[in-house]
Image (tube, one colour):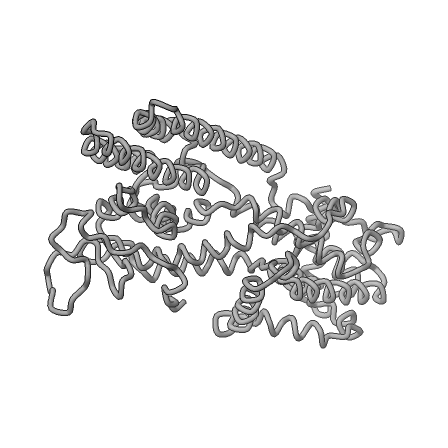
Length: 483
């Protein structure tokens, strides 16, 4: 994937004097082997040593880092250093700056309070954006150390102490909420195939299906969008960064993501698989061709409504479900389906040219979201596995460090930009009212295993050749033996 311009990400200005370096910070054609740390191109930070980048993070009396830089560095730093180690280094820099301001004069006391306010703001942004960096005792200890020293800057009225106390309370609440979500999620975390039910030879005609719960494609698309936004809200930037940090740990035999083992990415991916399998189950288990045709056309309409909403993940899951072999082989059924709408959807999801058509549609939805006046127009839910692959390939085709040993920060600007876009989309408040009945069905309805899907498909439309006949007999025997 070609790196886009960095103009969309305002970057931290040049403050070369802060580093005590004789280098100007600008890259000149004739500089050759001269030491430049960090390196800028056209005013944009592109590389630097870890130490220089950490110094850029810490405020001074006259400087506060650009918020985009704070986000990008805190996000990417975990690839190179544990959060508690980074906190310790930040604390050391704070101590040095605090000591320089402790002269006792009234003017210096005012400067000390101003410096303390900037440090608190940095810690506030850190704890709010990456609360899980503070889940272990080492990080909390370092945070308390810095907080203790900063409170000494304003012991007279205790304002700083109150702000830090509130910040800490909010942090603990965020950690508690995420921990509870993790525990609940673990109870229901099962492979898709384990949710399959033993197929009856002839399902009862009165058996409940999705159409008996919701026959309006738009409403079902809205409920799928509700589920998507609910799940995506529990994906955090550090979860996404594990794609990079985990790969780095494998390459260097040093774990950078051992602060916590999260299942958020896997759980969201499982939701995609569950939806695909549910679509296939709903279609394959119907005995009568006419009703089966109606079900296929219904899901095509649901996928189309998802596309219109901007819910590309559910749309792709539905299309994937209908393209599974047990569904795709139902030629008699498909011959009765009006496939014009389906062809349009498949065109949007055409994998050629790196999903060029989908990316164009996604870009259009993103632009619509930026200028939208209503929550409905702000919805952008990308195809998650493609989003993950983009980050993965960005990581693989660009090195973490340059030949001179400096961190390739240009790479992390781009990864950060993509993750920032995702975080912006996930914060959209769902404009659709929750329908418990529909969502309960979507989340708990029995899903056939791949084997059961094939058997149901063969029973709906018999095997057409010897290979299919052999597969049918083998699968049927296997499933009955398990029963």
